[in-house]
Image (cartoon, rainbow, N blue to C red; front, side, top):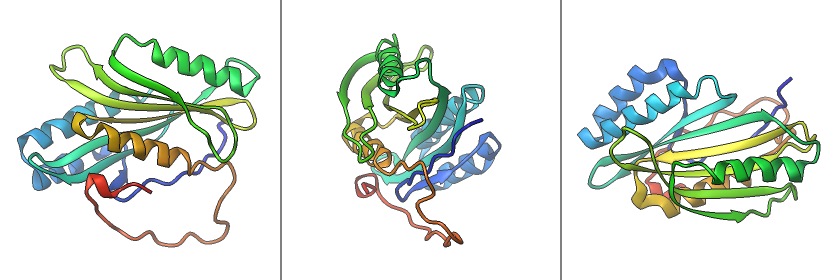
Length: 203
């Protein structure tokens, strides 16, 4: 049984699934030029490929950005069964596997200090995907569920490599909102619809 996880995404991110492709492509056409549409199409292709990889949540980031019109990004949260009973060891094993991927052309790696004190590691940089023709930025965070039964992997991917620092700060901020018990018991309040530029979405 998959454990329940709560987290918060900043303004400009919208929950999506594979069935939302047509609506998102129409949105990309309205918001941006051909380059932005291509970015969005490539990210949706990536979403299709993630269907069988234990993804429990996906969201698309749409932020006004010059000169392409809109900067797009794909967020995903994966829950994997832990390969080791120790959360620290399971997190380290998953982080090492990510860091050793042959897709990285350059990357930075560091530990994150979470309020929960759970082990957490960030790997971020540029990746080269065969057949794509240009690099993508990707930030991946690995941490453990407090039960020790699962490892969590948070991913943020974008073709807007010039916003690497901002996207890295976003994934770190989202990671700090992780909670393993309902942070707001009772009736859910309606969320306020807001949009923002990429450099204004930090929590």
